[in-house]
Length: 221
Ligand SMILES: N[C@@H](CCC(=O)N[C@@H](CS)C(=O)NCC(=O)O)C(=O)O
Image: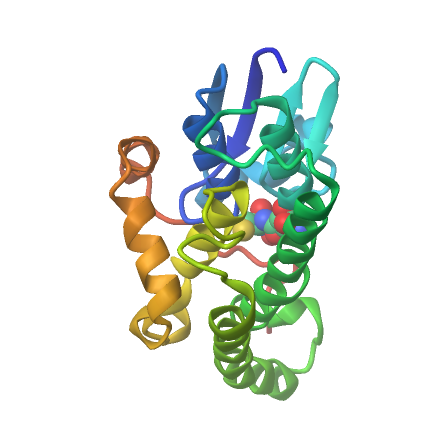
């Protein structure tokens, strides 16, 4: 992997890819989009990522989107002794299993609280989704804590890109009114990552910009 450019914004799922790039020592730039100015849907950004979302990783082979795909690409492109390289089939499949769960279930459950208008126009239905979302997120984290996080890292003894993804998504727990303390293994993993200088460098880079402002595609009436 040569030089890459990551499009991201503070507090988003794209932070996971940013952390992975920093942890493996990749040659990269990070461009922060300003969601309060709707930059993710600007004409120029849509030419890079027609989905209008972050992350997008611009590589010399083309543009890659979707957090699980980007994380796998980084892990396999930058084998380091510290991070699992995901080259062994079973380990790769377990990482894909975990990433798929975070991306297609946990992230989507959060989005039912922040963006329910994606699934229904009816205000009562949106309110019902908002109300239900925290319980669904809490159930997911209970399952992660009990069944998925082998400890101390997601895949067991070795750090992997699964951990930065979980770290990123766990940062959203307070926004759903959930305390991370309810999940001791997740809490310990998050603290261990937060202590790493590479993680601190990335989090510092985001401090200058406020977390994303939710601007609905179609504003609820
Ligand atoms: N399935 C995508 C989801 C990407 C996504 O929804 N990103 C959010 C930030 S966490 C975003 O860019 N939202 C902007 C918008 O919806 O306008 C992934 O896992 O990468």
